[in-house]
Length: 160
Image 1 (tube, rainbow, N blue to C red):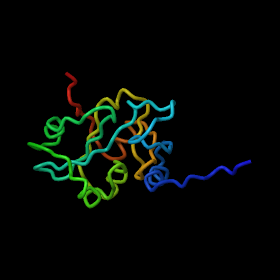
Image 2 (image 1 turned 180 degrees about the vertical axis):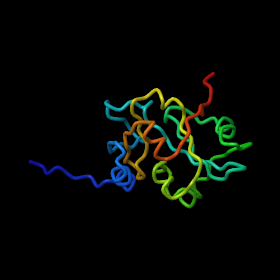
Image 3 (image 1 turned 45 degrees about the horizontal axis):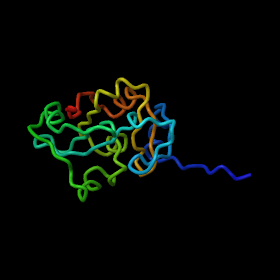
């Protein structure tokens, strides 16, 4: 019988476990390929790093299936405008590479404002990156928001 491979917890998972925050680690790469059928794409959220003209770096967390409305994020964060941080500057700004940005790890290192799209409030559980490409966590939206001191807001572009 094949030995069950023990998957090493990411730093994000270790932080959540140590803090007593209920979560489940999973291995999926939401950026590529098919998802296992038990995961709904609308429950997967991407963590986007942007630069506000007044606040500096700012984090927006939106469903993978949607687009961030930069004007809405700018308004709720007290900026006139926000723009995506260029990929070459991402790791220097957040500590993570593209595809691995996550609110827990970013909050540990930086005090950037974090906003989660309000659609997360409709969900029992949401999925966000665990700080490594291909590693994610399932967590209650309210637990995540409390832990990273995030606010919920309408951050999505309107579908025409």
